[in-house]
Image (cartoon, rainbow, N blue to C red; front, side, top):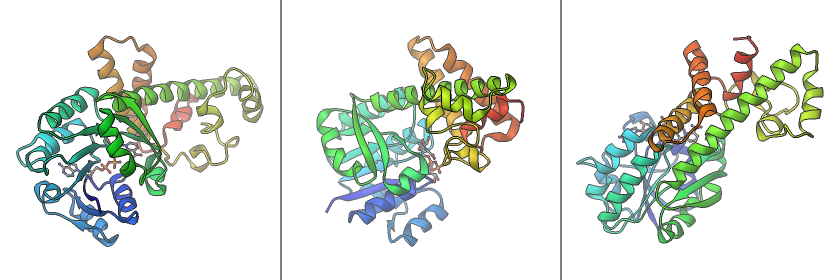
Length: 296
Ligand code: NAD
């Protein structure tokens, strides 16, 4: 039986760790929060009092942490994973972080003989609970092959993106594209309304025309055309605008660091920052429609 240490039992990590338990793995969880550790124990999991204790016996270490700084601390800190993991243990970081940190941590892991992949996810809390996440995985072939059977217990699609950091690159680029297409869709509806075109008619036409995209046909930002979209439940997330803003900031920093020209990505970041500053960061990211339509 594979022994797994799971560090970061938050909104995403807790249901992911529970799915590993359900699949019959021996999982030891660790989180700084007493509440999150207690929630994992309630689900039948074991918990540890420190990272060192959690990883000492583990064949696989999985992390699901807020941002790059936490990933650095947890892996590279004196009391961290690299200082205490078993020889050859496989390391999987599923946090959404910057590519540079992902590559640096992977390099230090490799220097200590640990295979490592960056494996950020798409699919949100619902996907984590239902074990239908998409994993975008960066790392050497052997590390990907070793990680795949574990990731399959938590996800539906497991895609090897390339070498270290390319999982994070895929996640950041995808979400930048998503933000831009959502803003475009929202702008088009706001203009269409002012031109006297009904929402359902514009939807019917655009979804069969060249404006068709996922933001329109699967996640429509106006209520009505796509019944299970957050727009039909007062924009309860879904995927919160604050989370989208985090990913757009990562995209902006990354683009600057490699000299990529992403003007619409920059503008999308400004629009989501304004939405969050106005106090709506907890709404679904499709609520950008309400902002562009002058409702909030
Ligand atoms: P969260 O804040 O709910 O959970 C993070 C957990 O990490 C917290 O419980 C926190 O106590 C713990 N933590 C922080 N520092 C720690 C440390 N040093 N040692 C141990 N535990 C520590 O965040 P989340 O929503 O679960 O997101 C986790 C990651 O997944 C983020 O990178 C996020 O961008 C990404 N993500 C989230 C979603 C989503 O819908 N929530 C979707 C896709 C990707």
